[in-house]
Image (cartoon, rainbow, N blue to C red; front, top):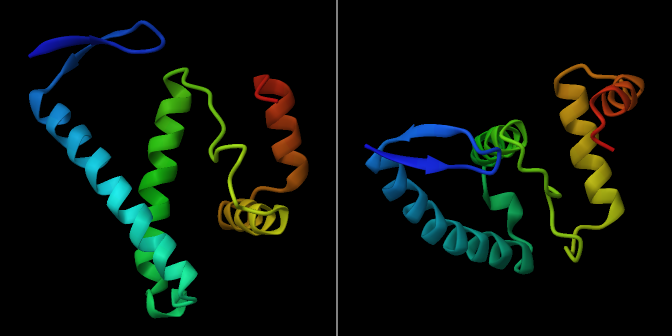
Length: 116
């Protein structure tokens, strides 16, 4: 096993299989993004079962949270994204509702954690 130095300068044991996974994720991410974008462009999102979307969102949000915990603070979506304000609010509202978090609690967490 080799050592990797992440953004918060923690030394962690790194399993060689993880590097293979990361490389495969990079390849598949580009392909999956393209396929999903094409589905959106063709207005065929109703053909994809919601469970598949939930599975993808769950692991992506977990990964984002892990990177946040590791000190990697970056916007979840690129600033030049095509996502409009309504779509962002729908997604944020759904996440808050799913975890039973009130908007006031979000504001308090942002103040306490300095994440604004």
